[in-house]
Image (cartoon, rainbow, N blue to C red):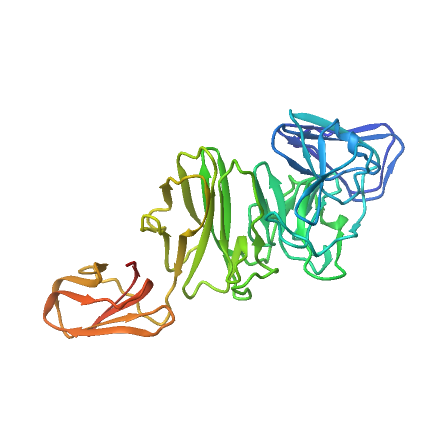
Length: 447
């Protein structure tokens, strides 16, 4: 027996003449990885524990299974129209395909047959369809092995496929684009179904046996550059959802199949968060070209029923030399995420696609020196400058985010000065120069 959360790797050829059991319970599942030839003359059983209630994605780990092998669980296959169709009790569970299964109570399936020990090529992938919040080209496939798969392994063979994969996790989807996401390091568990997206004609996909790994083995990436990204998490009670903002100079502002990941619809009982690409796609991973300029992204959220307190939390994963501002337009609240990374609010149940925005601001070419005796802020249509000392021959300028000069004023021998602001909504750059002193600041104008 291979107990839950234990693994066995066999480096050479092996024959199983007796009975081999891969056990599973609520704590996890055992893992079996044969690297040589595998000969079964006895009985091979792979267990899969499934909790009751929410649906799970599943993929058959042995050959010859039918839907009735799942002890009466409701088995469904994904239809290209964005709907789900029941799988008949005697219908086969095809190798490499994924299925959605739901049980009223927790149970453990025992799956008997010959395990898969070689590459699996997926056929009949389609690029059309879509609906009910699901994008076109979505196909549900699965890990056909009795151990985990490394989605980042170089041996994956695919053509006309998006980079991202999607796994249903109780009430929302987890995502991974090869660098960023909440599928930990892109590791797909044994017997796990997952979505891929086809984006062209004549697609092909091979799930390589070389990408197998025991989930508990050390995982090393020696020369890979770490991705730069930010996380926004929304939660209500014990349920949460996450979206990711990645920075990469190779990406685009429209939906980019090499980086971005669609936002797939989760359970109506859970909160959801996403952002929009320039061409209007809802995404769970939004990759923008670089972090050396300024962007704002529109955020969307879904508030479930009975949500008394909603929390948006910002999680920084690397050093970002700029400001990050969350704007709630309904009560017009600005939150500097570098100072306060958690925002509590309440809202009636529903979808909000226009209420929240996030601003990423980074500045180059301006020598940003904070002068501790000078304060600049915006109020009632004016910029207000307060200093503890007289400002000599001061020049104040206002720039839009694309670098255009929007306003200019000069003054001297003053400690306080109010300057009428240009009629602009959004972030601007203001600079104040007084000879040897230069100050720059980012200010959000809301009228």
